[in-house]
Length: 300
Image (cartoon, one colour):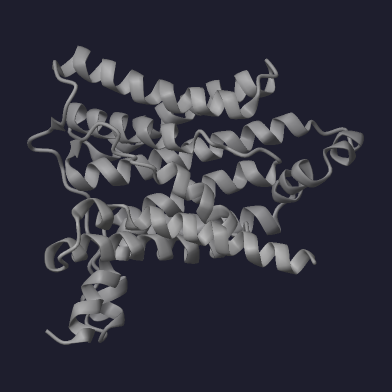
């Protein structure tokens, strides 16, 4: 196998792997633009992952599973937002509490419903449809990389475009950004910044619900702590992507590529597995350090 034949499947897998980072990053961007750092992304992904696969298995419908999983995630996002915005709790504490609640709640519920705190396997679960367009799939290199993914991957790309339109081309987007940059001016115009912050949180619940669905419906099972730090990496993706939807798309691909490389490396490199599995997180720390250095030099 030559280098080109080897790299194509790695890049192809990177596009699938990056989808949860991308979706969670877009949701986190909405709250970031509204002036709130949403560290609850990790827990929201976990909620979406659990309920999407459970509802899909119980109803026999992928659409209902994803829809109900998103609604449950948005419900948890609303609780997080209500405690933060209406009860004036510290956003960092409520975000951490949401992450801890998600981990404990899904474990307890899994034991109550299925009698196990381990992996939940669902036989006969419908597979996510793969988008195959023969005319496009036959394009050399590009066809092998960009096509043949499941439908949620392409939905993630669509959400990037919709997020760009929403943020930069609609009154809602102007007001959302105004909430983060100058909430007093927004209030003086008779608008409530808190409403736009809540809207951003609910949008993050929607995208994190999709991100969780990607993880479990691809696998056909629920694994405890399946989010596995993706919500935290999504926060890095937001800043590395310059707080723009298409920047987040590029940054998410970088982390998807890092994870894809680490998956392939386990098969042929004589390196401890723990180090290889930690590679995406090493990339995360490295990216943050480089970004801090660049910002520091730019400020001088």
